[in-house]
Image 1 (cartoon, rainbow, N blue to C red):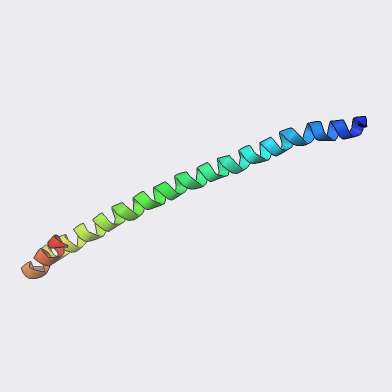
Image 2 (cartoon, rainbow, N blue to C red):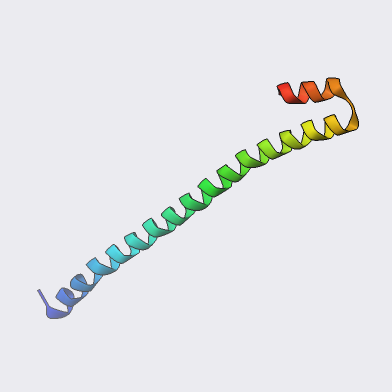
Length: 71
């Protein structure tokens, strides 16, 4: 086997490994961002529901406030 081919084969293995590590790191970052987004969506739903209940209580609509609270 020629020397140049041995050099090319010797260099491609670490390059492929580095590319795989880069892709894995990017997927890890994407997972972290997705988790933060999901947690924000859950917190926003609680905030919106709490806001609806408080607004209904402040406006004096007891029936609507009870319905929002049950929901």
